[in-house]
Length: 234
Image 1 (tube, helix red, strand yellow):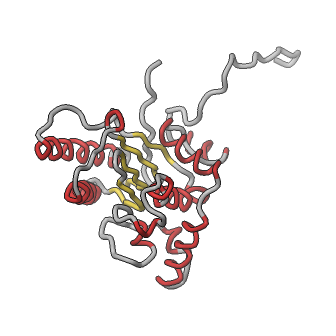
Image 2 (cartoon, one colour):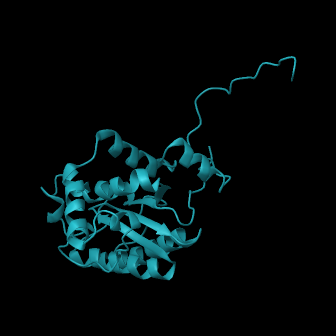
């Protein structure tokens, strides 16, 4: 079966995952992390993509981003991917692919899942057993949101501004959100939706999105469609 085209629509947040080929490491030094973040920053600006959150793991990375245009996110990811592979291959004296095919992504319903997706991204290193607390991990946007550093890559979403009337209030509220963690079903839904490409949200959200694209947004139900029985009025 042919792969569905990637779902990308402007003015909607997208959860993005890019993995290393065969789960291989995509970083060999702190400089590699810095280089990838610089490439993301450069191309997010160039292609008009607002980056809300990120985490760089050993063999993959996550982004939460809202593009201004339909082509902005794919163009950004293509530019970042190609340039980082050239950099990494030259530095490691290797050749060939670094990525596990194309990146995975999907749209998420802002009101229902955006803050949860940010917490999900921040908690990746904790779930992986790399650190005890999200604040202990240097390669994510978490410390920006809890006031421990200023990250020029980040464009906070309006929902974050609504978490408090002052910077301190927002930082405390966000720290508490991440500390509470996610329910298992939320975590599973965020992972599955990004890997599969199905839109993540309630029925009304998906129905409204479907008006903007011909691409199918949710997985079809198994089995043949139910045949409608004719009536006298048909």
